[in-house]
Length: 145
Image (spheres, helix red, strand yellow):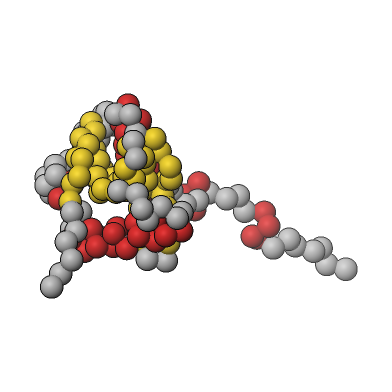
């Protein structure tokens, strides 16, 4: 009988180039969130949630500052060529955050608690240290009409 040959796929080694590379933007975002969390803790806030998700969207960090529930958007950039990171928190993003914040307050039965929206922007050169700027009460939402 003729000799059996193994399929080529069974004997070919896996090349490193075929493995998915980590997304550098996601890594930068995770590093930024960790740096923002550390900055908030140093400022005396207590972290309640990280990456709180609902069908309506996500809030990066939820913290407590005394009795105030703080909803935090974290924006990280390596270069300021496109403006400050906080400028990326558009009115549309603010409305989405407010809807998710309301969902959080309902889910946790904290509708009676005061709340605010902060932004932590992080900026730093590639390979360098990120510098955090905490913008307290970064925006307010007013009912239309």
